[in-house]
Structure formats: structure tokens, C-alpha cells
Length: 365
Image 1: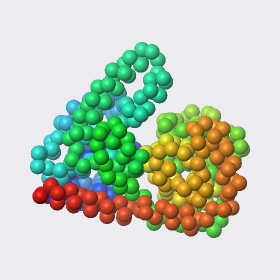
Image 2 (image 1 turned 135 degrees about the vertical axis):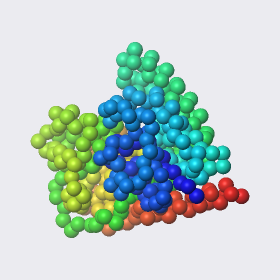
Image 3 (image 1 turned 120 degrees about the horizontal axis):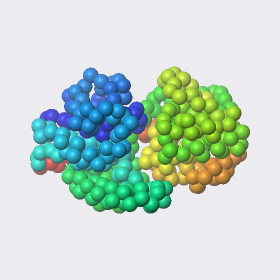
């Protein structure tokens, strides 16, 4: 059986790339297909694998221009020749829905989310752009939604990375999805017997992560905040940061584990599809202060492994931090760590393998 793994691109190292690494380990002979790739952003564990790209990879400065080339994605993904593969597993965004395979082949999509800008965040995006830009955006969104819905019907089976995403797949794409949580390296965690006086944030510094809320809240409360990661929002965040906010950029694995283990709590303000970083923090027995929406509702237990705040506002987050500090002594690190053991990468691989084998058996009947 010939196996192909399809991913939108290798431009950053995030949760989607961790999924690809685990799938590649499950299927060591599989070829990997992407729209385009920046070599240094290919995970080290798969750099020696056969990775095929599309014509988009020949465009200079693809890392900066990839958002502007979105209208070319359907043509690019459909240009991939997957006719010799019996099993295709695609991961991440909706662009991978559109791959063309043989009639007797099987396409299983591990979906992180339908395109949020075109579906649930459509009205919000319209409000944020100029009247002229709104005309262009509306026309573009209409085209992308039609293509995405149509392409989703080509997929044989959907797997969602959370119940939150399964509901979104059902609402917008009219497809049912099995839930298999993404892989998290729970084994790296440990409970430390001492903790420092800082809050922690880990992840890409992008607008949708709402790190500005963390910065403003810690400015207001004069709390020490350590931010790990880089991204397009870095300069703006540094401009609004007060003296208690510290930016670490990229850190080594050894430094990251120490930061996780010794933080006071982990701050998370994003409306995330799943959210691997809050799970990683809990693997070290640390509580999470999270926005009460999205994937966090499936990984954090209010009052037991962390606390929620209701709105993506500074005042709401400040109230959440203050509530946490009133409960701080009641959190039990070992119980927090136990809460996330079922997100371990080993469980992901077991469940994925079982799902694929069942799907292949059904197809053969």
C-alpha cells in the first residue's frame, strides 16, 4: 500500500507540524506533499523524507507573500499527482480538502479547522476593513466558501482535533467528524517543588493569539510576564509592554521546560481550535488562566486545573488573574498533570492507526 501525507506548507513550526511528525512516524515509507516549503521550517525528524511541492514553491519570497497568493491554492493543490497512492492522509487547513485521488483510494483528513475568516469570523473581518476592501473581501470570501465546501465533499473521512472543531465541520461543511486530540509530548513534563513569581505565555506572536490582552493586563497589575515566541506582532507588543513584561524569543527545549515548570501560571487569551501550549503547561502541573471558549473548554477544568475569564477584554483577564491568585494555594500540581495524560502523543498514534485500519477495512468490504 502506497501512502501519501499532505500538509499545506512548512512555514512555521507549530501544532500542525507536530501532527505531521507523528503521522510520518506512523507511516515511515509515506511521501509528503505540500504547497510550498521553507527548508529550515521542515521539522528535523522528516527532513530526509521525500517532500514534494507545487509550482508555488518557485515564487520568490513565498514566506512573505503566501497570504496574497490564496486564490492560487485550489489550482496548486489540484495540480498534485496522487494517482499512484492508495491511502492519503491530509492534515491542517481546508486547502488540503481539494486533492484529487483515484476512485478506489482513501482520503482521510485530520482537520484543525475550516477556514475561520470565511465562516464564523466573516462578519468580524468585514467590520475591520475599509469599504473598498470589504467589496473585494466579500467577493473573495464567496468564492473560497464555495470551493471549500465543494472540496470537502471529496474527503472520505474527517477527523477533528477537538469537539469544538467537529461542531464547526458539521455546521459549515455538513460532514461528520471523529474526534482525535492532537499529540502532545506529555512525557516531557514534571512537577517542580518550587515556583517563581512570573506568568508565562508560549506560542507564535500573531494577532489572533490576543497577546495584547496579556501585556495590558500584566502592565495594569504590575505582574511579571514572560513571553516565549516570535511573530508578526512582536514589535507592536514590545511597544505597549511595560517594565514587567519580558520577551524571550526562541528558547532551547531545556529553557522552555524550566520556564513551564517554574511559572506561577500559564496565560492563554486566544480563541483556539485546540491549544497545545495550555496542555503542555498542565503537563508540568501548572494552572492555566484561559479564555472561556474554543478548545480550552476541553483541556482546562475551571477551579481544578486553572480558571477561565469570560471575555477577550483586559478587564475580564484582570479579573481572571485576580480570581486565580485568590485560589492559587488550592491547585494540586499532580492532579493538574494527571488531567492531560490522555492527550499524550502515544494515544494519538494508537487512535489514528485504529481509525485508518477500520476505514481501510470498510473500504475493502
